[in-house]
Structure formats: structure tokens, C-alpha cells
Image (tube, rainbow, N blue to C red; front, side):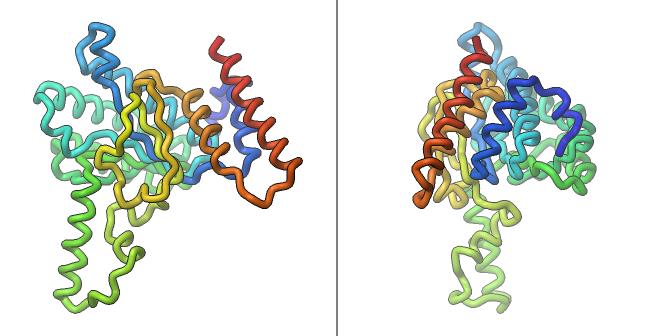
Length: 278
């Protein structure tokens, strides 16, 4: 478990995490659509890039909370293929912020046992950003804690098409036959082949869509929508999303006493969250 980040936590944070861990049903993989940076800035009369800058602080806090909570996989939708259509100045700032984040945060990720990886059409990134990304991935490759995956220049449809093309190519080469095609085979050709499917998808800003994110992988994911913009989304908001998820995950077969204890446990977490915000 990350020791440096554990020591940074408040007593309330530690108690909330203790209560959440007692459920034994925390999601193995959380995927987040980080939306609302631009609107956050515009509502404050700031340039859009200030929303992206503040969004980095949310990334930092959610990564720390996920790691100390024992979440195994966290995937962040950082930049879609469609985002390349944005104004050049905004894209330039986004790439500078990405490079800065990778350079500054990699030593801390490494020290706290976080393994970084990325999915998407990565060669579309500016060369300097791509080189830094590869360095960060290599430097954290041996870590065994949280796997942090950044979806960069990513498109769920593009990845599915790419997988179909590779399958067709292997059929042409005689490595496969059409009868070999199964759901498991398709999954093995996706960029997410080494990741379990997300248990929980969180979307900020209140939008009710997946926006071309992990379309195949989220077929059975629980979805949590918050109206908060990403720059305002911090660890207490993550904990609230987890309480909502765990309430849905209550299984048949529990005794009445187990259900009562579970309900009380989640009520205690929500009480601490309200008290922590006051």
C-alpha cells in the first residue's frame, strides 16, 4: 500500500476508507469521464485552460484516494479523438499540461507504487508529449499497486474498428477462422485487453452519455452521474459515488442482520462526508 499518501490523509479520510473497505465489494476498476473543465472556467469568467489546469488537481486527488483505498484499476478519459477538433490554442495548452503532469507526477507515482499506462492513438500526440509518456510508463512499469490508465487520443469506436481489422488480418493469414470469433477473442484485440471491464463509470458535469468511451468494455458497468464539474470533483465526491455503487451492489442471500449492518455502515460514511464538508 502507498505509504507516503497514507500518511497525508486526515483522520476523517482514514475512517471513511475503513468503512468503505468493510463492504468487501469495492469496484475493482473505476473509469471516469472527466467533463466540465471549460464550463467551470467560463462560469468564473476565466479562460478555458484554467479549467483544465484546475482539473489536474482533481486528477491528483482522485488518484491518491483510489490508491490508498485499494482500488486496483483507475482509467481516466483525458483526451478523446474528437478533442483534436478544438481550437489549436486550447489543444496546445492541454498538451503542455499533460506533459507537465507526467513529468512532475511520475516520481510520486513511482514512489507510491502506481503503474501508469495509456490507451488510444498515442502516436497522434505531439512528439515531446509522446516521449514523456513513454518515459513515465517505463519508469512505473514494475509497480504493483494501482494501475492508472490515461485514455489519450482515444475513441471507443476507433478501437473496435481497429480490433476488427486485426482479426480480419489474422483470418487472412490463416491464424484464425471466423468460427474462432467470440466475445473473449474480440476483447483480447482491444487496447484494454489487459484490463478488467470497469465495474463503475463516473461522469462529471451531469451529461448522460458515454461520449465514445470504452463502448465494448462498459456493457455491464454501473454508471454514476454527478452534476459537479470535474475541477470540483474531489475525494469526498468519489466516496459518495462509491456509497451509491455499494448500495446497488447488495446481493441476495444476505441475512437481515447483514443488510442492516451494511446500511448502517453506508449511513456512517455519508454522515462523515456531510460533517467533513461543514
